[in-house]
Image (cartoon, rainbow, N blue to C red; front, top):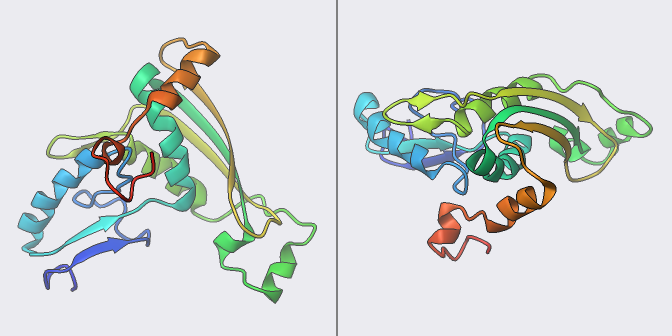
Length: 186
């Protein structure tokens, strides 16, 4: 309703993330996906639009994968997440359930990381083209108050020495950094 009424909607919910006319946007990774908004407005007869942001664990995974994909290509990604109780919305006393406990499965979290990564690292040329990379995720809830950790293993398409990988990370600049936007950290 809000998009139909001409509002710009930026949503954290997973509801629209995988729709074929909604960009799943990380500005430093896939700014070209914003081009789908013209199609979204036209096909839905809206003056506004919806842009979705990815799952929290998907965001920092893809920020790290983009320089590797861009420089060496990616064949496979394996990620194991260790997600804090804050991500489950456990405030105060309910979080005590996590003391001395690890929850080895977070419903729908693994699928979100896998599916969203294919869309985010893919291309857009009038329609979304999924990235051709195998992605496997295991997601765990751990007794940490705030912050998620990821253990990531990648298979690159082209060989790289550790110093090459470091150089790829150090030289990477997303479009917001290239434009010198005030909200984009150097």
